[in-house]
Length: 473
Image (cartoon, rainbow, N blue to C red; front, side):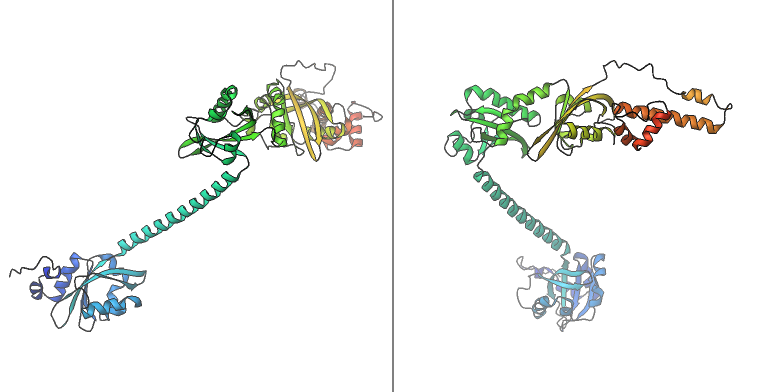
């Protein structure tokens, strides 16, 4: 029979007269095929039959709903919705979502009840809302994360703005691509003698004296291409002399320059010393001999270009803070002697040792050093000169013991015990001579290097014919 139903009534679209001729289980299965779950509930609200359209719902314990009140399968706060659907209250075309009790937690299902007219039974069709609930949870977490990030950024912006505006130092942010001022704090505006907002968007050179504009642009370009150099002295348009320090930073995929202007007449002592010492710094940088400055712990503070070449380093920043013993002297020998003579005499001249580059290459060098004490601060300065091109005068009068080849020729002629004894004497004499050479014939220092007492060293010197017990240092 063709049943015409109004278009506005979605429930009337279900041909109940056709369903009535089908068995109840077949009707439930047919509806379950078009949705996720279908239930048959009697007039007392007890589940009498069910069918599932998806297999993953079987793991949620739905089979246990059979012959149980439908309201007992949901969370306590959702039972009032079940009672309203069983009583037929409300709009019959309205879908109601409830949360069932499941082993893995809440099981959200959206239901629509259809009366069958068979002894007050209801046909209930449901849709699994777990995927939609998961999406809602992800959306909620993403929204909360965005709100937290937005709050954190606003707090950071407020702290940055407070620090930027209250800083007594003049700070200007310059776009590296076009050299225009993007932001300036009140101290910079006061120093330039311009009103608030009067320099934003203007070329940076507009606040620089005409004679110093080329130097200022060159300083900005040098920082954009390489590491930061010493503060550059410039004059502003009102004639005020300043020390300009520039730092490169990235923001929003662009390069910007943080320019700090410190008045030279009211600047700190440290800034004035840096500007005043600039000629000395340039002279040390151009010296052909390597020069390195260390603190009291012999950690490197600065080094000139010749020292960078000597240790095969690319930048002075790569060496700053590293121990000098990593590059200078034989481990455990030279630096201790050098430091002892520096502390005793205040300077050392022409100390022969070696330099070890970062890649392991060694070179013989000659070191002159001096110590400087200012208050509680102690500094050591080392001037290093390579000996690779010097012609060393060999001591031809020195008679060495038998060579290794000569010792091996003794095999079969003398016993092994005598060969070992003579080899030991050879090594011992060579080590003593090397120690005396390193210490410039200072026998006390040579004994310390060799790990011997003075008396033992004197005895060995006498035995090898290198000195007498009566000789003094």
